[in-house]
Image 1 (tube, helix red, strand yellow):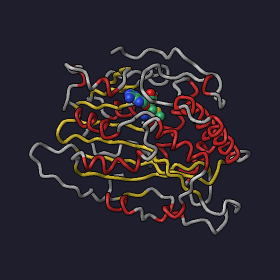
Image 2 (cartoon, rainbow, N blue to C red):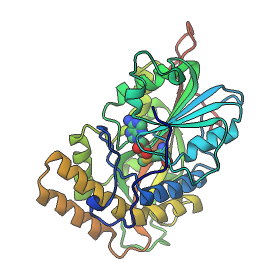
Image 3 (tube, rainbow, N blue to C red):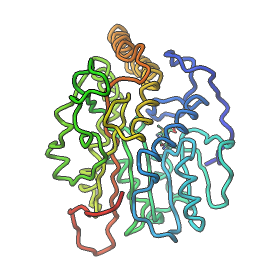
Length: 357
Ligand SMILES: C[S@@+](CC[C@H](N)C(=O)[O-])C[C@H]1O[C@@H](n2cnc3c(N)ncnc32)[C@H](O)[C@@H]1O
């Protein structure tokens, strides 16, 4: 596998035409671009995630002196670099389908980027010596929702890399959309739902299965979100990866499963924390820019009726048209951690309680 070089492709504009963007050149289903515009989006999103998540990204309670960690689908390397900086004696790998831009951060001695499809990397026989089974203390990934077509298989490959006792952490979006009711009201209206509806919260597996959080009454589908989710499914991608992770981890035998959710607002309204509002302001502006090319690309790749795709594009554009701060829409980003059992350890399905965020 080659180490990563400078990206050869660049894009100067991010309009709704996916044909002006550049993409990975592999067989993977991954649907988002890999150009400079996308790098800038990922970088901005990362800094907003730090605020949203209370100043830290890594949720698993890692020992300081772990020896090996991996960030799968590392993008621009933002989290990979953070792990390597926080754990200077740990060898940290970032793997990605596309080259990681080398001009964003300083090079760290303990950080290595490898350009590959993760699923192919771990299927090699004999294994690549850097990615030997059961050799990692920490396996991390974030936002692979547009790339993973088989989540149980992906999770099993991630677990395969982990040592007994190692943490696996996945942070994923879930495209159940929610809408703040009465959007005609101003953002200062006292009729808005209470702020705790939007606050980050821990959940147990049972709470997740019960769908009983107060936000559930605000679920909202639109033509564009329905079409997007149908297109993702047509590519074998799972629009509900986020909410599936915890039960997948439990079924795969991981222990100490911890779940929490953060709001990904696509707009700004009263009741959001300043950090969630900053996130929402950015995502509100990015949503049409990001989703229009994806709708068209997935539409073309799946042979979807072009009229239906264009109707979804118009619906999406109308939704966000002229809205300086986006719409009053959101979805949840799930952070789920689980631990590979120590050999011969009894299995506990009970999540850990207490301070872990
Ligand atoms: C939305 S980006 C997120 C990047 C980074 N994790 C972050 O949160 O900023 C998803 C990244 O996963 C990579 N990716 C998707 N499927 C992959 C696969 N099978 N193997 C390696 N990388 C993959 C893509 O190339 C892309 O850079």
